[in-house]
Image (tube, rainbow, N blue to C red; front, side, top):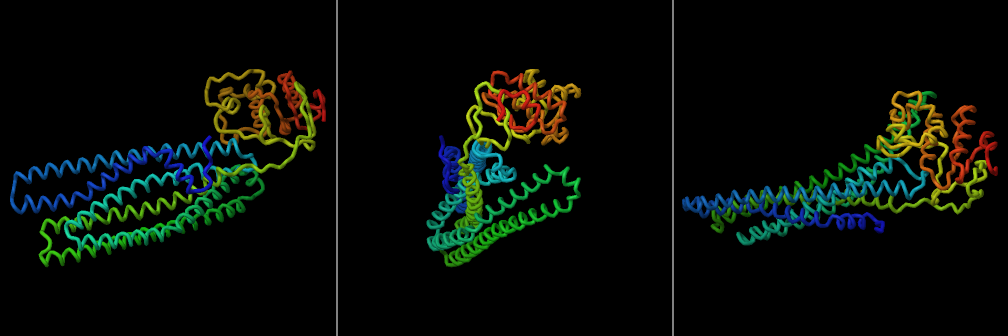
Length: 480
Protein backbone atom coordinates (compact mmCIF):
# COMPACT_ATOMS: atom_id res chain seq x y z
CA UNK A 1 0.00 0.00 0.00
CA UNK A 2 1.36 3.40 -1.01
CA UNK A 3 2.32 5.63 1.91
CA UNK A 4 0.28 8.79 2.34
CA UNK A 5 2.51 11.88 1.85
CA UNK A 6 2.86 13.87 5.08
CA UNK A 7 3.57 17.24 3.45
CA UNK A 8 3.27 19.16 0.20
CA UNK A 9 6.94 18.56 -0.59
CA UNK A 10 6.67 14.79 -0.13
CA UNK A 11 3.51 14.72 -2.27
CA UNK A 12 5.32 16.55 -5.07
CA UNK A 13 8.23 14.12 -4.78
CA UNK A 14 5.83 11.18 -5.04
CA UNK A 15 4.10 12.84 -8.01
CA UNK A 16 7.36 13.13 -9.92
CA UNK A 17 8.43 9.61 -8.92
CA UNK A 18 5.20 8.09 -10.28
CA UNK A 19 5.69 9.79 -13.67
CA UNK A 20 9.47 9.94 -13.75
CA UNK A 21 9.92 8.31 -17.17
CA UNK A 22 7.61 10.81 -18.86
CA UNK A 23 9.11 13.69 -16.87
CA UNK A 24 12.68 12.73 -17.86
CA UNK A 25 11.71 12.27 -21.52
CA UNK A 26 9.94 15.63 -21.53
CA UNK A 27 12.88 17.39 -19.88
CA UNK A 28 15.40 15.86 -22.32
CA UNK A 29 13.48 16.79 -25.46
CA UNK A 30 12.59 20.28 -24.21
CA UNK A 31 16.25 20.74 -23.35
CA UNK A 32 17.09 19.77 -26.94
CA UNK A 33 14.48 22.28 -28.09
CA UNK A 34 16.17 25.11 -26.17
CA UNK A 35 19.60 24.05 -27.42
CA UNK A 36 18.24 24.31 -30.95
CA UNK A 37 16.74 27.73 -30.16
CA UNK A 38 20.13 28.91 -28.88
CA UNK A 39 21.91 27.57 -31.96
CA UNK A 40 19.72 29.59 -34.37
CA UNK A 41 21.49 32.98 -33.89
CA UNK A 42 24.84 31.18 -33.69
CA UNK A 43 24.13 29.47 -37.02
CA UNK A 44 23.14 32.80 -38.58
CA UNK A 45 26.43 34.33 -37.45
CA UNK A 46 28.41 31.41 -38.89
CA UNK A 47 26.59 31.71 -42.24
CA UNK A 48 27.39 35.44 -42.39
CA UNK A 49 31.08 35.06 -41.52
CA UNK A 50 31.84 31.92 -43.56
CA UNK A 51 29.45 32.06 -46.51
CA UNK A 52 27.87 35.49 -47.01
CA UNK A 53 30.93 37.73 -46.59
CA UNK A 54 33.29 35.40 -48.54
CA UNK A 55 30.48 34.85 -51.11
CA UNK A 56 30.94 31.10 -51.04
CA UNK A 57 27.71 29.84 -52.66
CA UNK A 58 28.55 26.16 -52.25
CA UNK A 59 29.20 26.50 -48.53
CA UNK A 60 26.10 28.71 -48.21
CA UNK A 61 23.95 25.95 -49.69
CA UNK A 62 25.38 23.39 -47.28
CA UNK A 63 24.92 25.69 -44.28
CA UNK A 64 21.36 26.56 -45.29
CA UNK A 65 20.51 22.84 -45.46
CA UNK A 66 21.99 22.40 -41.99
CA UNK A 67 20.00 25.42 -40.87
CA UNK A 68 16.78 23.81 -42.15
CA UNK A 69 17.68 20.57 -40.37
CA UNK A 70 18.17 22.56 -37.16
CA UNK A 71 14.60 23.83 -37.41
CA UNK A 72 13.32 20.28 -37.95
CA UNK A 73 15.07 19.20 -34.74
CA UNK A 74 13.80 22.33 -32.97
CA UNK A 75 10.18 21.71 -33.92
CA UNK A 76 10.24 17.94 -33.41
CA UNK A 77 11.91 18.03 -30.00
CA UNK A 78 9.38 20.58 -28.72
CA UNK A 79 6.47 18.43 -29.90
CA UNK A 80 7.85 15.22 -28.40
CA UNK A 81 8.83 16.86 -25.10
CA UNK A 82 5.50 18.65 -24.70
CA UNK A 83 3.54 15.49 -25.41
CA UNK A 84 5.54 13.52 -22.83
CA UNK A 85 4.90 16.13 -20.15
CA UNK A 86 1.23 16.44 -21.11
CA UNK A 87 0.87 12.68 -20.67
CA UNK A 88 2.47 12.97 -17.23
CA UNK A 89 0.08 15.82 -16.33
CA UNK A 90 -3.04 13.97 -17.48
CA UNK A 91 -2.13 10.62 -15.94
CA UNK A 92 -1.09 12.11 -12.60
CA UNK A 93 -4.00 14.52 -12.28
CA UNK A 94 -6.35 11.58 -12.92
CA UNK A 95 -4.56 9.51 -10.26
CA UNK A 96 -4.79 12.36 -7.76
CA UNK A 97 -8.50 12.89 -8.42
CA UNK A 98 -9.19 9.19 -7.92
CA UNK A 99 -7.09 9.15 -4.74
CA UNK A 100 -8.90 12.14 -3.23
CA UNK A 101 -12.31 10.72 -4.15
CA UNK A 102 -11.42 7.27 -2.80
CA UNK A 103 -10.20 8.77 0.47
CA UNK A 104 -13.41 10.74 0.82
CA UNK A 105 -15.55 7.70 0.07
CA UNK A 106 -13.72 5.08 2.13
CA UNK A 107 -11.76 6.82 4.88
CA UNK A 108 -13.97 9.67 6.05
CA UNK A 109 -17.32 9.72 7.80
CA UNK A 110 -20.20 11.40 5.99
CA UNK A 111 -20.41 14.13 8.60
CA UNK A 112 -16.75 15.03 8.02
CA UNK A 113 -17.19 15.65 4.28
CA UNK A 114 -17.63 19.12 2.81
CA UNK A 115 -18.61 18.76 -0.89
CA UNK A 116 -16.91 22.00 -1.91
CA UNK A 117 -13.66 21.00 -0.22
CA UNK A 118 -13.60 17.55 -1.79
CA UNK A 119 -14.42 18.98 -5.23
CA UNK A 120 -11.74 21.68 -4.95
CA UNK A 121 -9.02 19.24 -3.96
CA UNK A 122 -9.93 16.68 -6.61
CA UNK A 123 -10.09 19.22 -9.45
CA UNK A 124 -8.32 22.57 -9.08
CA UNK A 125 -5.71 21.35 -6.58
CA UNK A 126 -4.99 18.15 -8.52
CA UNK A 127 -4.49 20.18 -11.70
CA UNK A 128 -2.29 22.71 -9.90
CA UNK A 129 -0.06 19.99 -8.44
CA UNK A 130 0.72 18.68 -11.91
CA UNK A 131 2.17 22.08 -12.80
CA UNK A 132 5.34 20.61 -11.33
CA UNK A 133 5.89 18.81 -14.64
CA UNK A 134 5.76 22.12 -16.47
CA UNK A 135 8.27 23.46 -13.95
CA UNK A 136 10.55 20.50 -14.62
CA UNK A 137 10.29 20.85 -18.38
CA UNK A 138 10.68 24.62 -18.58
CA UNK A 139 13.27 24.73 -15.79
CA UNK A 140 15.54 22.11 -17.36
CA UNK A 141 15.13 23.52 -20.85
CA UNK A 142 15.81 27.07 -19.64
CA UNK A 143 18.98 26.04 -17.82
CA UNK A 144 20.13 24.02 -20.85
CA UNK A 145 19.54 26.90 -23.26
CA UNK A 146 21.22 29.32 -20.90
CA UNK A 147 24.26 27.04 -20.52
CA UNK A 148 24.71 26.71 -24.30
CA UNK A 149 24.38 30.49 -24.72
CA UNK A 150 26.87 31.21 -21.93
CA UNK A 151 29.43 28.78 -23.38
CA UNK A 152 29.15 30.37 -26.81
CA UNK A 153 29.49 33.86 -25.38
CA UNK A 154 32.56 32.86 -23.35
CA UNK A 155 34.24 31.44 -26.45
CA UNK A 156 33.17 34.36 -28.65
CA UNK A 157 34.10 37.08 -26.18
CA UNK A 158 34.98 36.18 -22.60
CA UNK A 159 34.04 39.61 -21.26
CA UNK A 160 30.48 39.52 -22.66
CA UNK A 161 30.08 35.91 -21.48
CA UNK A 162 31.26 36.82 -17.99
CA UNK A 163 28.69 39.60 -17.71
CA UNK A 164 25.91 37.16 -18.62
CA UNK A 165 27.15 34.58 -16.11
CA UNK A 166 27.15 37.21 -13.36
CA UNK A 167 23.82 38.88 -14.14
CA UNK A 168 21.70 35.78 -14.83
CA UNK A 169 22.19 34.06 -11.42
CA UNK A 170 21.40 37.36 -9.69
CA UNK A 171 18.18 37.57 -11.72
CA UNK A 172 17.26 34.00 -10.77
CA UNK A 173 17.83 34.67 -7.05
CA UNK A 174 15.66 37.78 -7.18
CA UNK A 175 12.85 35.94 -8.97
CA UNK A 176 13.09 32.99 -6.55
CA UNK A 177 12.90 35.23 -3.48
CA UNK A 178 9.87 37.11 -4.78
CA UNK A 179 7.99 33.89 -5.65
CA UNK A 180 8.04 32.47 -2.10
CA UNK A 181 4.75 34.08 -1.11
CA UNK A 182 2.86 32.63 -4.09
CA UNK A 183 2.57 29.20 -2.47
CA UNK A 184 0.72 30.50 0.62
CA UNK A 185 -1.45 32.82 -1.45
CA UNK A 186 -2.35 30.00 -3.84
CA UNK A 187 -3.33 27.68 -0.97
CA UNK A 188 -5.53 30.40 0.53
CA UNK A 189 -7.12 31.06 -2.86
CA UNK A 190 -8.04 27.38 -3.27
CA UNK A 191 -9.42 27.23 0.29
CA UNK A 192 -11.69 30.25 -0.23
CA UNK A 193 -12.77 28.90 -3.62
CA UNK A 194 -13.74 25.62 -1.96
CA UNK A 195 -15.67 27.49 0.72
CA UNK A 196 -17.59 29.41 -1.94
CA UNK A 197 -18.34 26.13 -3.73
CA UNK A 198 -19.61 24.58 -0.51
CA UNK A 199 -21.82 27.65 0.05
CA UNK A 200 -23.36 27.17 -3.41
CA UNK A 201 -23.92 23.47 -2.77
CA UNK A 202 -25.65 24.11 0.54
CA UNK A 203 -27.82 26.82 -1.00
CA UNK A 204 -28.91 24.67 -3.93
CA UNK A 205 -29.75 21.72 -1.66
CA UNK A 206 -31.95 23.91 0.50
CA UNK A 207 -33.30 26.08 -2.30
CA UNK A 208 -36.92 25.01 -1.84
CA UNK A 209 -36.84 25.79 1.88
CA UNK A 210 -35.03 29.09 1.32
CA UNK A 211 -37.61 30.24 -1.23
CA UNK A 212 -40.48 29.05 0.96
CA UNK A 213 -39.37 31.12 3.97
CA UNK A 214 -38.25 34.11 1.90
CA UNK A 215 -34.55 33.59 2.63
CA UNK A 216 -33.29 34.56 -0.84
CA UNK A 217 -31.69 37.76 0.44
CA UNK A 218 -29.88 35.93 3.24
CA UNK A 219 -28.61 33.21 0.86
CA UNK A 220 -27.47 35.82 -1.65
CA UNK A 221 -25.66 37.78 1.05
CA UNK A 222 -23.91 34.66 2.37
CA UNK A 223 -22.71 33.67 -1.08
CA UNK A 224 -21.68 37.25 -1.87
CA UNK A 225 -19.45 37.29 1.19
CA UNK A 226 -17.86 33.92 0.35
CA UNK A 227 -17.39 34.97 -3.27
CA UNK A 228 -15.75 38.25 -2.27
CA UNK A 229 -13.28 36.44 -0.02
CA UNK A 230 -12.43 34.08 -2.88
CA UNK A 231 -12.02 37.04 -5.27
CA UNK A 232 -9.70 38.85 -2.85
CA UNK A 233 -7.56 35.73 -2.46
CA UNK A 234 -7.42 35.28 -6.25
CA UNK A 235 -6.39 38.92 -6.74
CA UNK A 236 -3.69 38.53 -4.11
CA UNK A 237 -2.30 35.45 -5.88
CA UNK A 238 -2.47 37.14 -9.28
CA UNK A 239 -0.71 40.23 -7.89
CA UNK A 240 2.13 38.14 -6.49
CA UNK A 241 2.45 36.18 -9.74
CA UNK A 242 2.39 39.40 -11.76
CA UNK A 243 5.09 40.85 -9.53
CA UNK A 244 7.34 37.88 -10.21
CA UNK A 245 6.65 38.12 -13.95
CA UNK A 246 7.34 41.87 -13.93
CA UNK A 247 10.65 41.44 -12.12
CA UNK A 248 11.59 38.73 -14.60
CA UNK A 249 10.81 40.98 -17.57
CA UNK A 250 12.77 43.87 -16.06
CA UNK A 251 15.72 41.60 -15.42
CA UNK A 252 15.59 40.37 -19.02
CA UNK A 253 15.65 43.95 -20.30
CA UNK A 254 18.62 44.87 -18.09
CA UNK A 255 20.53 41.76 -19.15
CA UNK A 256 19.86 42.49 -22.83
CA UNK A 257 20.96 46.11 -22.47
CA UNK A 258 24.20 45.11 -20.74
CA UNK A 259 25.08 42.56 -23.42
CA UNK A 260 24.28 44.94 -26.30
CA UNK A 261 26.31 47.80 -24.83
CA UNK A 262 29.30 45.57 -24.15
CA UNK A 263 29.08 43.95 -27.63
CA UNK A 264 28.92 47.34 -29.35
CA UNK A 265 32.04 48.47 -27.51
CA UNK A 266 33.89 45.24 -28.40
CA UNK A 267 33.02 45.66 -32.10
CA UNK A 268 34.28 49.23 -32.23
CA UNK A 269 37.51 48.10 -30.58
CA UNK A 270 37.98 45.40 -33.23
CA UNK A 271 37.51 42.35 -31.00
CA UNK A 272 34.42 40.99 -32.77
CA UNK A 273 33.63 40.08 -36.38
CA UNK A 274 30.31 41.13 -38.00
CA UNK A 275 28.96 37.58 -37.88
CA UNK A 276 29.97 37.25 -34.24
CA UNK A 277 28.17 40.51 -33.45
CA UNK A 278 24.98 39.22 -35.11
CA UNK A 279 25.28 35.94 -33.18
CA UNK A 280 25.91 37.71 -29.85
CA UNK A 281 23.01 40.12 -30.34
CA UNK A 282 20.80 37.17 -31.34
CA UNK A 283 21.90 35.23 -28.25
CA UNK A 284 21.26 38.27 -26.06
CA UNK A 285 17.74 38.54 -27.45
CA UNK A 286 17.26 34.78 -27.11
CA UNK A 287 18.39 34.84 -23.46
CA UNK A 288 15.13 36.58 -22.58
CA UNK A 289 13.33 33.31 -23.27
CA UNK A 290 15.18 30.99 -20.84
CA UNK A 291 15.11 33.66 -18.13
CA UNK A 292 11.37 34.12 -18.66
CA UNK A 293 10.85 30.35 -18.64
CA UNK A 294 12.85 30.07 -15.43
CA UNK A 295 10.80 32.75 -13.67
CA UNK A 296 7.54 31.14 -14.86
CA UNK A 297 8.69 27.73 -13.66
CA UNK A 298 9.36 29.16 -10.21
CA UNK A 299 5.84 30.59 -10.08
CA UNK A 300 4.38 27.26 -11.21
CA UNK A 301 6.42 25.40 -8.60
CA UNK A 302 5.09 27.71 -5.87
CA UNK A 303 1.48 27.18 -6.96
CA UNK A 304 2.03 23.40 -7.18
CA UNK A 305 3.54 23.35 -3.67
CA UNK A 306 0.57 25.22 -2.21
CA UNK A 307 -1.92 22.84 -3.81
CA UNK A 308 0.13 19.80 -2.77
CA UNK A 309 0.03 20.97 0.84
CA UNK A 310 -3.78 21.09 0.75
CA UNK A 311 -4.13 17.65 -0.83
CA UNK A 312 -1.60 15.99 1.50
CA UNK A 313 -3.42 17.51 4.48
CA UNK A 314 -6.72 16.11 3.19
CA UNK A 315 -5.27 12.64 2.51
CA UNK A 316 -3.86 12.59 6.04
CA UNK A 317 -7.21 13.23 7.73
CA UNK A 318 -9.04 10.38 9.43
CA UNK A 319 -12.42 10.40 11.18
CA UNK A 320 -12.06 10.89 14.94
CA UNK A 321 -12.77 7.86 17.07
CA UNK A 322 -15.53 8.54 19.57
CA UNK A 323 -14.74 5.42 21.60
CA UNK A 324 -18.44 4.50 21.85
CA UNK A 325 -19.65 0.89 21.84
CA UNK A 326 -22.80 -0.75 20.54
CA UNK A 327 -25.70 -0.66 22.93
CA UNK A 328 -27.75 -3.21 20.97
CA UNK A 329 -26.62 -6.67 19.90
CA UNK A 330 -28.20 -7.98 16.72
CA UNK A 331 -29.20 -11.63 16.94
CA UNK A 332 -28.41 -13.87 13.99
CA UNK A 333 -31.22 -14.12 11.42
CA UNK A 334 -33.43 -11.82 13.52
CA UNK A 335 -35.65 -8.90 12.63
CA UNK A 336 -34.86 -6.48 15.47
CA UNK A 337 -36.49 -3.14 16.12
CA UNK A 338 -34.93 -0.64 18.54
CA UNK A 339 -35.52 2.89 19.72
CA UNK A 340 -33.04 5.17 17.85
CA UNK A 341 -31.97 6.67 21.19
CA UNK A 342 -30.80 3.25 22.40
CA UNK A 343 -27.98 2.70 19.90
CA UNK A 344 -24.95 4.38 18.42
CA UNK A 345 -24.44 3.59 14.74
CA UNK A 346 -20.93 2.51 13.67
CA UNK A 347 -19.24 4.49 10.91
CA UNK A 348 -17.55 1.45 9.38
CA UNK A 349 -18.15 -2.21 10.09
CA UNK A 350 -17.48 -5.22 7.87
CA UNK A 351 -20.55 -6.97 6.50
CA UNK A 352 -22.82 -4.22 7.88
CA UNK A 353 -24.79 -1.85 5.65
CA UNK A 354 -26.34 1.20 7.28
CA UNK A 355 -29.15 2.90 5.39
CA UNK A 356 -29.41 6.39 6.94
CA UNK A 357 -32.61 8.32 7.54
CA UNK A 358 -31.71 10.79 4.76
CA UNK A 359 -29.90 9.04 1.91
CA UNK A 360 -28.32 10.67 -1.14
CA UNK A 361 -30.08 10.37 -4.49
CA UNK A 362 -28.02 10.88 -7.63
CA UNK A 363 -28.71 12.11 -11.13
CA UNK A 364 -29.45 9.17 -13.42
CA UNK A 365 -32.42 6.78 -13.43
CA UNK A 366 -34.40 4.85 -10.86
CA UNK A 367 -32.45 1.75 -11.90
CA UNK A 368 -29.02 3.38 -11.53
CA UNK A 369 -29.91 4.76 -8.09
CA UNK A 370 -30.86 1.28 -6.90
CA UNK A 371 -28.01 -0.72 -8.48
CA UNK A 372 -25.40 2.09 -8.27
CA UNK A 373 -24.26 1.27 -11.80
CA UNK A 374 -25.09 2.85 -15.15
CA UNK A 375 -25.57 -0.47 -16.92
CA UNK A 376 -29.03 -0.07 -18.52
CA UNK A 377 -29.85 -3.79 -18.47
CA UNK A 378 -29.03 -4.55 -14.83
CA UNK A 379 -31.72 -6.85 -13.48
CA UNK A 380 -33.44 -5.95 -10.20
CA UNK A 381 -35.38 -8.60 -8.29
CA UNK A 382 -39.09 -7.57 -8.37
CA UNK A 383 -39.25 -8.57 -4.69
CA UNK A 384 -36.89 -5.68 -3.91
CA UNK A 385 -39.22 -3.23 -5.64
CA UNK A 386 -42.27 -4.63 -3.85
CA UNK A 387 -40.66 -4.69 -0.40
CA UNK A 388 -39.41 -1.09 -0.69
CA UNK A 389 -42.58 0.31 -2.23
CA UNK A 390 -40.74 1.37 -5.40
CA UNK A 391 -42.96 -0.90 -7.51
CA UNK A 392 -45.79 1.57 -6.95
CA UNK A 393 -43.60 4.41 -8.28
CA UNK A 394 -42.46 2.40 -11.31
CA UNK A 395 -46.05 1.59 -12.29
CA UNK A 396 -46.91 5.29 -12.60
CA UNK A 397 -44.01 6.16 -14.91
CA UNK A 398 -43.96 5.37 -18.66
CA UNK A 399 -40.19 4.74 -18.60
CA UNK A 400 -40.45 2.41 -15.61
CA UNK A 401 -37.11 1.78 -13.92
CA UNK A 402 -35.40 3.85 -16.62
CA UNK A 403 -37.32 6.98 -15.64
CA UNK A 404 -34.88 9.90 -15.22
CA UNK A 405 -33.91 11.16 -11.77
CA UNK A 406 -32.54 14.67 -11.40
CA UNK A 407 -29.67 15.77 -9.18
CA UNK A 408 -30.45 15.04 -5.49
CA UNK A 409 -33.78 13.52 -6.61
CA UNK A 410 -35.30 16.99 -7.01
CA UNK A 411 -38.06 15.60 -9.29
CA UNK A 412 -39.16 13.08 -6.64
CA UNK A 413 -41.13 13.59 -3.45
CA UNK A 414 -39.61 12.97 -0.05
CA UNK A 415 -41.41 9.65 0.29
CA UNK A 416 -40.30 8.55 -3.18
CA UNK A 417 -36.67 9.41 -2.41
CA UNK A 418 -36.86 7.45 0.84
CA UNK A 419 -38.33 4.38 -0.86
CA UNK A 420 -35.69 4.56 -3.59
CA UNK A 421 -32.93 4.62 -0.97
CA UNK A 422 -34.54 1.68 0.82
CA UNK A 423 -34.62 -0.31 -2.44
CA UNK A 424 -30.89 0.42 -2.84
CA UNK A 425 -30.20 -1.01 0.63
CA UNK A 426 -32.30 -4.14 0.00
CA UNK A 427 -30.70 -4.67 -3.43
CA UNK A 428 -27.22 -4.66 -1.81
CA UNK A 429 -28.36 -7.63 0.30
CA UNK A 430 -25.75 -7.32 3.10
CA UNK A 431 -25.15 -9.82 5.89
CA UNK A 432 -26.44 -7.27 8.42
CA UNK A 433 -28.74 -4.39 7.43
CA UNK A 434 -29.35 -1.41 9.70
CA UNK A 435 -32.27 0.83 8.71
CA UNK A 436 -32.72 4.23 10.36
CA UNK A 437 -36.35 5.44 10.25
CA UNK A 438 -36.91 3.97 6.75
CA UNK A 439 -40.56 5.09 6.50
CA UNK A 440 -40.63 8.49 8.20
CA UNK A 441 -41.67 10.24 4.95
CA UNK A 442 -44.51 7.91 3.87
CA UNK A 443 -48.14 7.61 4.97
CA UNK A 444 -49.25 5.02 7.54
CA UNK A 445 -50.81 2.65 4.99
CA UNK A 446 -47.65 2.58 2.87
CA UNK A 447 -45.58 2.21 6.05
CA UNK A 448 -47.41 -0.99 7.03
CA UNK A 449 -46.94 -2.40 3.52
CA UNK A 450 -43.21 -1.56 3.49
CA UNK A 451 -42.66 -2.97 7.00
CA UNK A 452 -44.26 -6.27 5.98
CA UNK A 453 -42.27 -6.29 2.71
CA UNK A 454 -38.95 -5.75 4.48
CA UNK A 455 -39.76 -8.43 7.04
CA UNK A 456 -40.55 -10.98 4.33
CA UNK A 457 -37.64 -10.09 2.05
CA UNK A 458 -35.06 -10.17 4.85
CA UNK A 459 -36.28 -13.47 6.30
CA UNK A 460 -33.32 -15.55 7.50
CA UNK A 461 -30.98 -12.50 7.60
CA UNK A 462 -30.07 -10.08 10.36
CA UNK A 463 -31.91 -6.77 10.21
CA UNK A 464 -31.99 -3.94 12.74
CA UNK A 465 -34.59 -1.20 12.32
CA UNK A 466 -34.10 1.98 14.35
CA UNK A 467 -37.65 3.26 14.63
CA UNK A 468 -40.51 3.85 17.03
CA UNK A 469 -43.02 2.89 14.32
CA UNK A 470 -45.77 0.52 15.60
CA UNK A 471 -45.80 -1.22 12.20
CA UNK A 472 -42.21 -2.41 12.62
CA UNK A 473 -42.53 -3.16 16.32
CA UNK A 474 -45.54 -5.36 15.64
CA UNK A 475 -43.57 -7.51 13.17
CA UNK A 476 -40.26 -7.61 15.06
CA UNK A 477 -38.76 -10.87 16.34
CA UNK A 478 -37.15 -8.81 19.08
CA UNK A 479 -37.83 -5.27 20.36
CA UNK A 480 -35.18 -3.30 22.28
